[in-house]
Amino acid sequence: MSGPVAVARRLGRIVSDGVWRFGFAARFLVMLLAHSGQSLMRLHLTVREIYFSGVLSLLIIVVSGLFVGMVLGLQGYETLQRFGSGDALGVLVALSLVRELGPVVAGLLFASRAGSAVTAEIGLMKATEQLDAMDMMAVNPIARVVAPRFWGGVISMPLLAAIFSAMGVLGGWLIGVVFIGVDEGAFWSQMQAAVDFREDVVNGVIKSVVFGVAVSLIAVFEGYDCTPTAEGVSRAITRTIVSSALAILALDFVLTSFMFRGVS
Amino acid sequence: MLDLWVGVFVVIGLAALVFLALRVGNLAGADLSDAYTVRAQFDNIGGLKVRAPVKSAGVVVGRVAEINFDTRSYRAEVVMAVATRYPFPRDTIASILTSGLLGEQYIGLDPGGDEEMLKSGDVVQITQSAVVLEKLIGQFLFDRAASAPAQEGTGN
Image 1 (cartoon, rainbow over the protein chains, first blue to last red):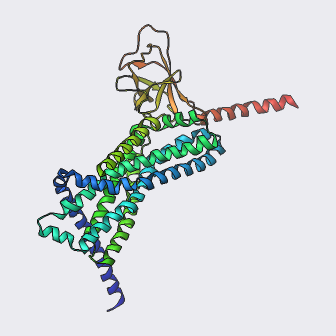
Image 2 (image 1 turned 90 degrees about the horizontal axis):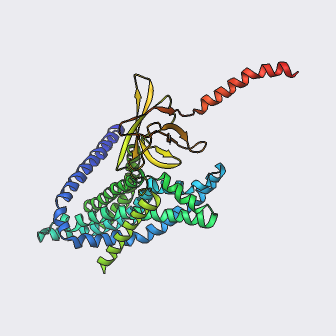
Image 3 (image 1 turned 180 degrees about the vertical axis):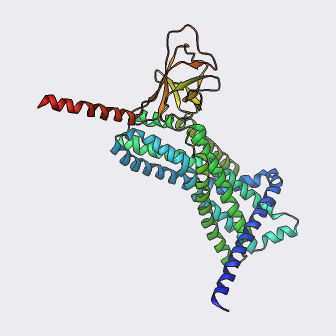
């Protein structure tokens, strides 16, 4: 077998595999949505998943939000005071958190904290043939296992992003007002004058909903699609985290360019 | 037990959203659901943007709703939405001002003494354009250049 032909064949295989997986993911999403009504009727399944992916992620989200806000406070003040506008610290902290860092960093944390757990759980269920067993008992595994985990993630993600942003603003306040001594009134009033509810807060929430859908879909899909071996499950978990991170960053660029293009 | 935690989680999440909306954002700011629109033509609007504030005596009374270019007069036409609870006299002066040296631009309304109030769709007749910094600097340099030779001639 000559070199170039082998390379071309490999390339062709990689591309066609990728396209096939992409198509399978799309069909999987359609199946998932079709069975969602059935699983949302039994709400306790979804509530359980909100507990596992949302409530248990609360600690890491609160702590990281606080620290990100505190770092923004220190760094932002350092730069702003060179221009004599240390009072604008609140604007800097709030806008960067609400528009970008809240949804993106919360999404990345959510993918590694909750997304990986979902993939591991579904992958292990597949490896131990629990999903097949459900099918044999005429219980649809997509309605019983996959859809509740997907919706649990979609509901948790915007709430976690909002908590992250709120904690970040408090962290910035703690450093800026309490430790550095920026005027408290200027901090809040400039922030309120600059942050628009619809333009900034609502757009941030829309971003976090989109990230929630993307991360949850990737997590359940990778788990459902994994090779049912110990190695396959571990690879699926790695893929979940890597593709979630890439998806979040790529989607964030696309959404930002649509949302804040005009800046009017 | 599980339900309780999920309930607490959802409440904390919603509270964070409310905090962002009310304390960080300005949802509670000027309410423009009930507003009338007035038009004004300017020679130059500088960097004025749609949604920029309309202020009178420093208080936000409305927002810029639209900015168009009038091809008959070759001037900029700005449509402002002003809250109904703030009526202004018909001879109000609209000027484009800047908050601070490098801040955002906004429209300032200086009320006149007319008995009649502006109605929706009215046109503000007296306007003052934005101060364009480049023009000002250009003018300053031009003045300097014009006066410098004369000073040298008399000085020495």
